[in-house]
Length: 334
Image (cartoon, rainbow, N blue to C red; front, top):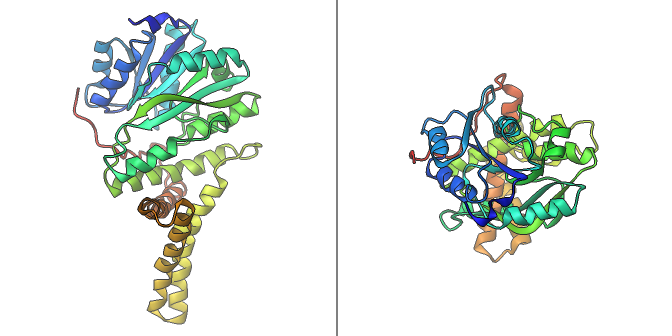
């Protein structure tokens, strides 16, 4: 154990499914900081639970459906509270993330000095932004504004008292569980804070358009879940995102197709790519219209609207509660 292991009031809950070597790297970044580590596994077939136990973490299996990050974190937290009832703070970590060495010291001190803050999160970086344009875009997504924030992501140091007060995550959430939980925290008078400090290194591992679109579908599905869950509150979320996905991914294609039928002119269908091209140019202009990155970024954002729209439709059309939107390939067993 390193000299950082004196944080007896901090523990970790790590979640994962078939993360392979990524899980090993994640746990090796955590165990030198604390031996109070719970790994919650969502049905891995690569031996992840045994790997976690061999490295020194306690492993628990996530039961129930849907098998989601929210359910995994709740299951891990329940086991964590039994094993370490004296801990005041819990660091949630996704199993594809590596924790920065100084993060816990920084975040813990901030929460102690600011008792009204329930959650402290920092900068999440992509491990390989150079490996694909998708990874590079996601790295930019993680660079959120510093200061009081509306929500955190999957990695964050959370005050146990506050987490228990609002009942943790909603286990039925497929995506967007963190903003939904933070909405309830803010409703209860707590604050969320984004610190200007490195927190974790993430491995998105997105190399194909099909992965990007599946991730976008997951977002669309999650938007509707969170929007419905926060209805009636002062912090209802994702209304604009849902409207945008429906407008660009569903209504516009239907209207253009209907117009072509009404006027009996197939060439009218060309209006659809033309309108999309104009919107791509508008987004690119905000990023710097002479930049190649801006054009590729804006095209990718507009392509994602189709995936988000499919996710919205899937929410309303599907009667299943065990939806999965895995967009990563399973890693080889470590």
